[in-house]
Image 1: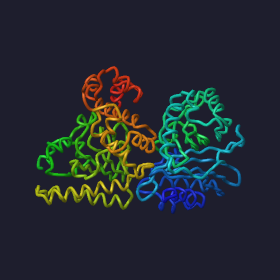
Image 2: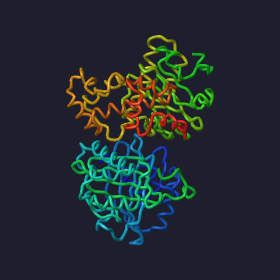
Image 3: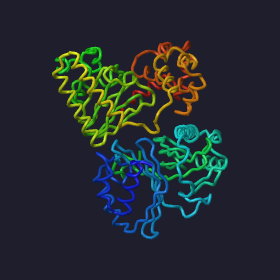
Image 4: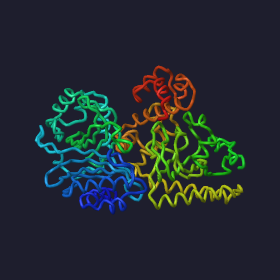
Length: 254
Length: 284
């Protein structure tokens, strides 16, 4: 799509998959590297320090980029990581900010183990990957922003059908397909988003970085929505529990 | 000029002090904060000049129109006349502050959605710092002749061009002229009317064309954009003036303060008084 997405993919694939983390970080990172991945310190040194150990611990790294797009300076990437021949399987969602040389300067991420089963039968990564409807980027971002503000933060679930297709394809392992299943889940678990931190999109895809309370637990999420004909038709999510600030080595998830 | 370097002239008075004489001037961030003292920066300001902050090293934050922006090495902030800003004196930064009269930018006036900051890569930052040094050098030998004015204006315009090239915000491309014309009309006559038709008249586009252009660009109708812009103005006035809610309501063209309060709450989500109280915690 562009140099920014290429650089974000390259730091993943060359730096982490191929293990050339030091070369990759110097090649693809700009004058700063502000980290929101809480075990990784800010700066190129922080990245090198973390991945030297990560590569040691995980000698076999099968990493695939599933989805990705650029929105201005921002890049979204969703990846599937299989480590050590099936010892771990992770899905990750990342947002990168870049400078005007297209080099990475800031990074937000969510990582979660791939659940072995899901209510809908979908996996956290399957479904359409192609970015289409490029002329609808702004309208789709607006639709998702309004959905997030009114339904997720505002907790006005009665409005869900204004934004979400009745046959919503659901990749959240805990929720069945369809609008009704989402509403029931949100009601039963007291799902309330506290704050929407970032909304970036390209064509039919819109990603949202947010914090929420799910069943009483402070949670950080990157939701990914696919919009079709003016309604949210598909939803993927990667979430993490927000740990105590004493465990962070940087400024935190957002 | 000499007053400037003594530190007796507040930067906020820059434009009125110099008029068009000195089109652009560079100030050191830390020296500026120290010389003004913490109380000067306690509340929101609405300068009438262009203000660019170029960060060399350190970190901190700056608030522009109620959005807090992190400051990082290589980041450039561009605050436009009319915007409300808040300095955070606890910042530990090596940065240059460039102030300029609005005529020195040769750029179009501020429009909602314009980016407030950009992250310059290595090469752009080197060019930006060269331009800052050049403005600094030229302001010291400034003689108010026509060519010196042109020179400083051109140097600042170059800095703005560099910033704009680096700051393409998410999803912004070539915007339809009907949208830009409507936005410009709002900026020009904001308190004149709350009826879209009054702003569209004379633009050469039908109300429908304008509204469709607004929807394409922002997803919002022309009326929603008008309402949103009017309430940004209300927030700015609540933040940087001591005017009562009733007087701000009148200034914005509302006949009844209660209508204004209801309208504000619908668009912003809190009452005008609550919004103003929340600004006590404006500085993080």
